[in-house]
View 1 (cartoon, rainbow, N blue to C red):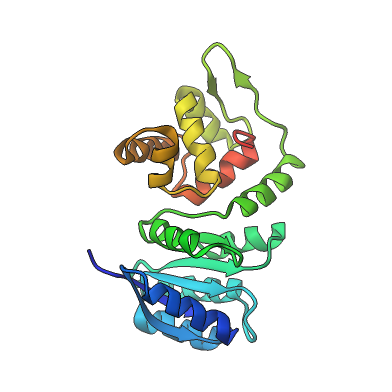
View 2 (cartoon, rainbow, N blue to C red):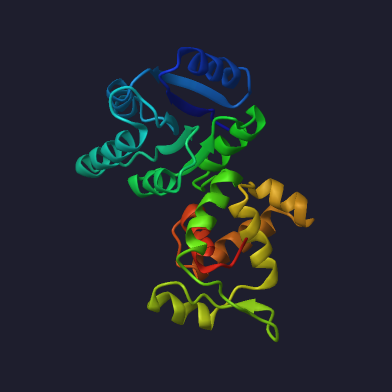
Length: 240
């Protein structure tokens, strides 16, 4: 298996050097570039096309959200077929910042107090094409959505859930294909930031079974990835 190629964009030298050193000591990771500001970081992303970019929001010139937005625009304009994923690493957990990061094209969101093991897990999940959301961030999004959307009732007879907070076209799909109890358990663990391996361990099922549940959840929620599924689930009150 090839190493996960990483670019670090972080303005604090000690933090950046510390992450680089720690990741290079872990098998399966290769740091292919680093930058201390957004301008240089954008150039690195376009030049090296890493598997995953770790981007700090608080950069000194253009912030991490704007950097992510410009990178995604540059990819679209050049019809770049590379599949670079963006993992935001920051101390900021404000609702508007979190949602703005995902809207700009970020794939995962970690707080800077994350442990090295959690960061490694987040990088692997992100590289697999899924999204990793820090549990603290999931709670932030939930607090916001609970003030906007009433919780969706659980149907006792079927032990399944219909999403009434989604767009009308999604309602029709979910009414026909509601989430099962097991899918709701998996969905809750996705929102908690668990990888497929961790979900399998917690639910005493195989990773292959987890992947099947995740695929079914994405289909039922009309979501492109785990982040979108988590946000829609939180907005609909499916998980807490």
